[in-house]
Image (tube, rainbow over all chains, first blue to last red; front, side, top):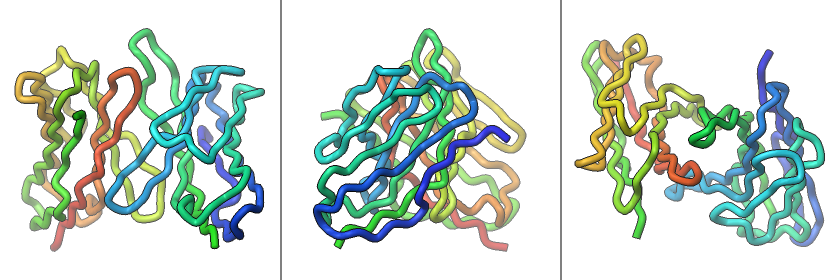
Length: 115
Length: 109
């Protein structure tokens, strides 16, 4: 089954404790992206990757890191989480065409709470 | 400044009626526009994509229009059902994909 998986689905942590949220897709998509979703603010892009070893900042990259060592995986790293990073996080992937990415396939989401 | 606007208030309609959702944008020149459905606590699911040179796109009970002069897309669900109740997001593709905040649709029997 074609899908994007994220782990963990729920995470409660404390300020400053490094964490990683994993994302994996089995569709051989070139493009992968991380979003956060907050009430009233919608989906905002954190980082994206056009292919292996190619990553770039989205609209809200501060406090996050990513890496793309393999095509299928795109982990999101919070080196020193803070309460303002409490949010619902989504990973997404898509094929890349000549005019950009096509429809995005989203993971199930990771609800992160930082106390 | 660049802005995407979707009705922030929920749209409540009766089963069987046509639901029409609006996506307006300013200061963008999108190559194409996408619509997604999102259920509470779940990831968005792609519905339709329409390109700038297309006026209308249909898929089963769904219809999307795209007016680049008005800078507006309309999303229609005909013969709406309670199962259509969800939040619907529009997303503009410029050099990246920019999402609106979504409109919640409630279809009551």
